[in-house]
Image (tube, rainbow, N blue to C red):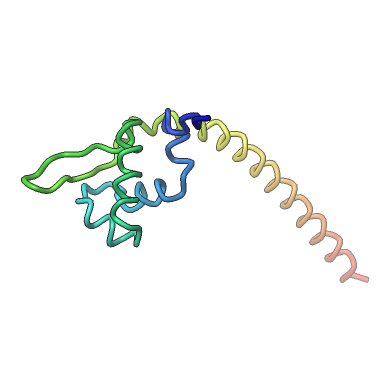
Length: 120
C-alpha cells in the first residue's frame, strides 16, 4: 500500500527536522547547495531530497547562476504557518501577562507580610 503524501503543504514539509534545519541555514541569505551540505553535515542526496520537497511546497526558491543553483527561503509560502502560530502567541502572551500579574501580587503580599513581621 502506498504511503500518503506528507509534503502537500508547508506545515507538513517543515514538520521534518532536517528541512527546518535547511531553512534555518538559509535564513535570509541565498546559498548554493554545496554550502547547505557542508553547514548541515547532511549527505548531498538528503539535502537534494529535502530541498526538492521544500521547493514543491514553495518554501524554497532556486535560481540558476551559471553552473550553480542558489537556494533561498520564500517567506510568503511560510506565512500560513506564521499566521497559525500567531494565534497561539496571542493566547500565550495574554496568559503570561496574567501570570506576571499574579506573581507581582504574591510578591507584594509576601513583602507586606515580611514588613509586618519585622516590626514586631
